[in-house]
Length: 399
Image (tube, rainbow, N blue to C red; front, side, top):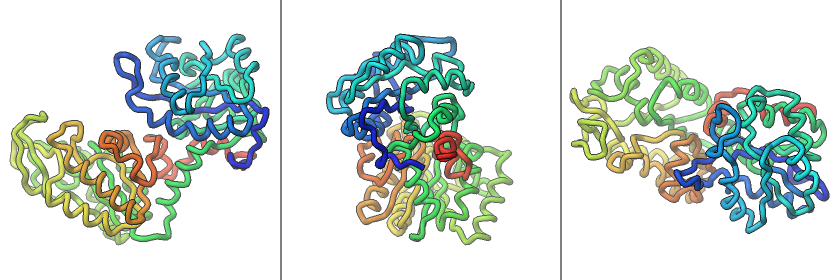
């Protein structure tokens, strides 16, 4: 397989699949530029090597063709900033004669951004003819969109067939794979996975997959209450998935058999309503009164989790410890984020992934202080689960 750093881009047009599916506010301004910032090193390397760049991405989920609110034109100011002021041309379409002429006329050092791929249903359908039309924009293909690597779409997977000898991962995907593999195949111990979020149902596969790879497993967030109830605890009105009680018990048993220590919250910050200004208190997680619900981990749990994080060498964090969007129930999530920063300073490898976890480290300005922040929520989870990601396999095959 071709390594990105070894490829000669001089005089070549590099067609790069990036993930610029970023949040926009009501003024169509980017509110989180993580994905754009993360793609910049790959683009800069090609430009500095004497090549030109054609960027393609999706944005949102347009239903019936072009919609102005989903136009990628909105990301250009932020993209130009992260490219050090390099001007970015814009193609009003991703295929067609006008877009093809724009890419054909590119000179070394120039950048073209194509319009939203998902304005065409052929993109998500993995249409080969559509992929072939996209392939006309480049002399080589670089997949640097980890966030869509688990989708067999035209621009992420099918297009690689048109570049049998000139396809590769960019710096971002290389970094993602290397970081996740570091967690999955670490020789350093202890390995800790911190898994939070609302529901066991959305995380059970990842929990089961991580058991053979970890020494400790912290379970926090709303999903913790299903495990607490499974162990006979009283959880009041807390979020629970009763149809996953047996699954939770089975996981606890498997963990015990494998010698993996599962850590559930000892105490919980409870509220009498799902509101930031609701009445709140702290109690044991297995003794939550009726009419009250757990919305964050309590101070005793924060202390216990901080001590555990301090002792571990490899740490994966996916999912918040509570309803961190509400300031009064964000303390547990903030504490975990800050503990990861301290662990990183001590030499631990810390990987943060999943939309809410990434949002949390960005919100508190800590993203630059952990080892790696993954840009791919669903893709990262599937890779951790051991699934073959089509976008990854397409580059590795026959190259």
